[in-house]
Image 1 (cartoon, rainbow, N blue to C red):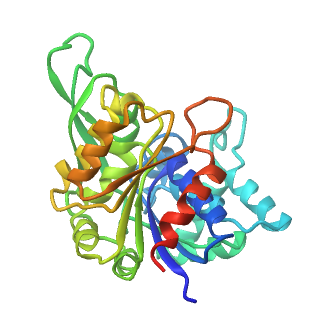
Image 2 (tube, one colour; image 1 turned 30 degrees about the vertical axis):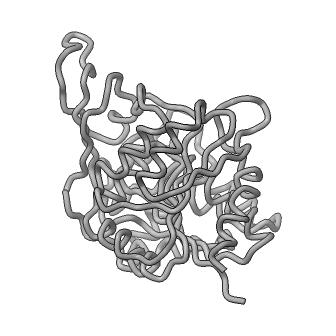
Length: 319
């Protein structure tokens, strides 16, 4: 029986949780996993490398996706831990993750971010492929009401992924720069041939929506015959302060009116009153699936194993 071809979109910790969940689901159903990763990160180590080395792509979110897909054997897991290791201290290496430097070196050596990622994937025995959303870094900016405490009634433009992610106030609109970046052809091919496309969890404006704001990707997503799954976050963060779970779904069609989904997956406890979310899901053409997805300690974090268990019957429906 052929594997179910799954493309997961996002960045950072949210995409990492989704990929680890898919790894768990892969024990029950055979999956062919591709991660398509946002390339707008300009904070921390990635931001420094973008500024100091004019990095082709910010490596941080790509590194996290590779680590999430690493094989289970001890040697590969140790390599994944090495990629995630961050230098301490106050010198020029302080704050950099080893994997960021490795990916930057591979991209400079090979001149091709996809070849660099494919080679790094062999080092960790990745159980899937990691691809960038675009072949060059993008900028993210947002119009935010109340971002300037001295002018709480004004809408100001906040520039940069990190600045948008931590901005106080209400995001009125978000966009990427350039507006039409060169997409990764391997990503659009994976979308075209997928059985499932998965959006979220993750920072909605800076990790999930950028894929829908990229014309080359958005067109491929709308045209793809694949079923589409949206995994909702457990709680809001700064950039989505004031947005309900239903608002998160509405944002998908606001930024890509042709977007349709088949399934919306949400945590039974954290979703709150489910009926507004159910109605919002139906406006996308989707049905709502509720399941326990959070870690047991009560914090608003997805448990990869629980999320993987919930994904099995959904993704298995593609067979």
